[in-house]
Image (cartoon, rainbow, N blue to C red; front, side, top):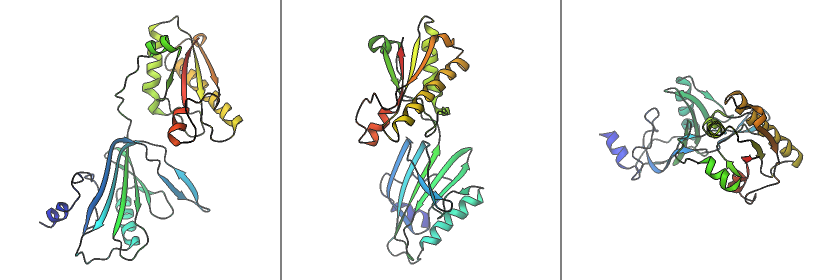
Length: 266
């Protein structure tokens, strides 16, 4: 009965947002929730001495839940009590604390890589706290591109599904579907030759961005040769760094559009 009472106070539409593998503190209700099938929240945490900021560049199923204390609840949960509750729960399933301040955790749940971030303020009696969860998984690709039609029309196509580690030319595993599309295009017409062109936004030094874009384009060509068995004589690579933006670099959204790989028909 107490459980029914607790959940009856949750905000409408948030009743099922909590994952089955982790519960809330007693006496709290859900006041706000957000849920996405796929999101890249860009969690940032601080670790080491001196503290260094680390950003988690991963995506998957995302949940954000804000809990408020129920009216009449007499227990007083401190910030330390809340953070240590989540820490102990994570450690019990052989997870790890990533941050210096017990706010960011990582665990494996049902075979999935899970990140958990907690925000509980600094109080002896916390009135509300926030939990963010990311279950890492590959995004379901629902939009399909007819590469041949696009290239026949414009002579090139920009691909945003080819992803790299930050400031590196290492291709992420999530890029396989986009790269397979390029391979299928090249296999379908063996007379086609292409130039793989790397692009960056304007963050950082110009010379570094030029070098990075060239290395990334070269990595794509190497993938097409080794994985796709495409004849290297049909492929060229080049990098132009921030020289050819498709939109402004003044916003995060614009920067994301400018970071891309283009396939140009020779």
